[in-house]
Amino acid sequence: MNEKLAPFLILFAAVLWGTTGTAQTFAPEAAHPVAIGAARLAVGGVFLLMLVFLTGGLSLKKWPLQATFLAALSMALFQPLFFTAVTITGVAIGTVVAIGSAPVLSGFLEWLFLKRRPSRIWWSSTFLSILGCLMLFLNKDSVVVDPVGVLLALGAGLSFAVYAIVSRDLVGKFPSLSIVAVVFTLSAAFLAPFMFVFEMSWIADVRGWSIVLYLGVMTTGVAYFLFGKGLTYVSSSTAVTLALAEPLTAALFGVFLLGENLNATSWVGMVLLMLGIGLLIGASRGFASRGGEKAA
Image 1 (cartoon, rainbow, N blue to C red):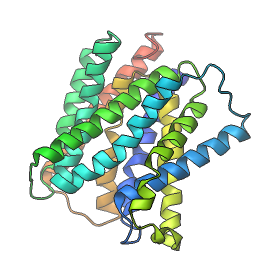
Image 2: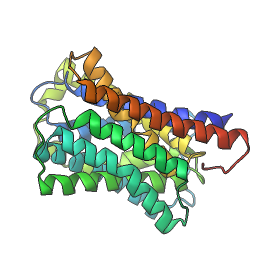
Image 3: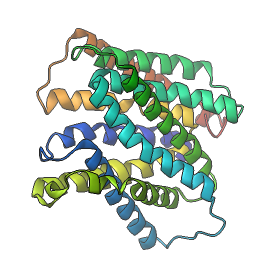
């Protein structure tokens, strides 16, 4: 049952991530995106640690320090790299390059370090999903390709891919809740200096702390806990491709909550994204029902 549910846990995590952009639009104007990212990691880390201690405590015996440090550093780097890329080269290019490159980079890293070649179904679903993401974003505003912004976006995609691969190894050896609690607490420590660089008085406002609370608890704590649980039975490359449901969710929220308009190309992109994700879920459930590989 867990194997069959695993893809849906990751999908639900991606849906929660997809609400991040909409939630940030309600934050005070003085709130810088990087400052929000640092604050959400801090809240998420504290929330996860509280859950760990409420459910039995945390044992650090034989804890893999190097892998944990790498996962935390990857997640910490993703925040400023992604937001800076979007600022430099625009939302369209920044999002497409960062989110679209992550599955490909994850598959390449799995093949390079784990000697695990992605399946044909993975390639097909990833191609459909990335093409859908491309069509969804590249017509929303004027496209300006800035080389520095593209490099930063690729760095963000690589950071997320590394986080997924390292976390996939960690959740196979330790409880997923303990893993995400330690990783995000450490990530928050890495990003803590940003709270002294950017204006943070906005967090005292009701809108400010309520948005950070939602982002920290739901889109960080709950979402990454579900992502970690799903990784127990799903390969990192498959998980990162399923995470492309994030831009799909963001686009739908933009239409139905923020009143954004999408043209025909964007709607076709949504359909391709859903086809790609559906294909991968079907393949993952097929492996599980046949008693196939643990990490399909």
